[in-house]
Image (cartoon, rainbow, N blue to C red; front, side, top):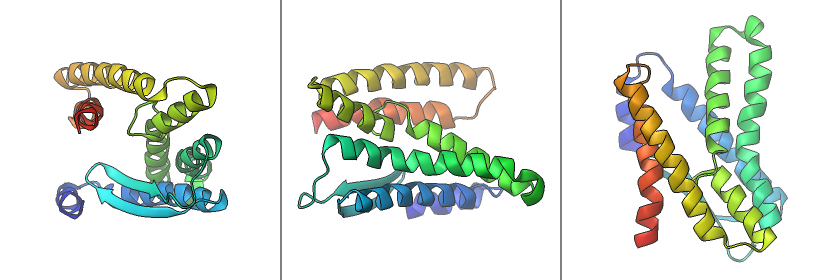
Length: 183
């Protein structure tokens, strides 16, 4: 995480990295506060090159309904910040617009129904509540969506409409559940 952050900081000519890290920190704080308010405990917080991983303590487990609320809390913080800041850009300036956009993107992205993201956790727990086979269904949804994003991102990259971030992120979303399935 630190090596990637240092590299991105070095390459960041637009001053976006610190705003993105702040949005990510607030996102995780939303999860943490929701977990605590719902009666859970966090046993591990690990920062990786693709985000943060928070594990719940087995001593204070949360049921599927509460896990859904905890998963929604991070994106909710980002979407609320995006809305509040977008309405205040005239008073706060361009940086508020930038921070609003970063929060909007992070909030929406994390709601995608992919296993590694909050949306995947939400779908998994909804399926558990419905009595369905959650693991296989979420894996299939993840692979389908990540594959579609990888194809779309690659086409947009070849057309010069996006940088390599979308295809690389889609590739991570595609390969990560496959690696977890093998492990």
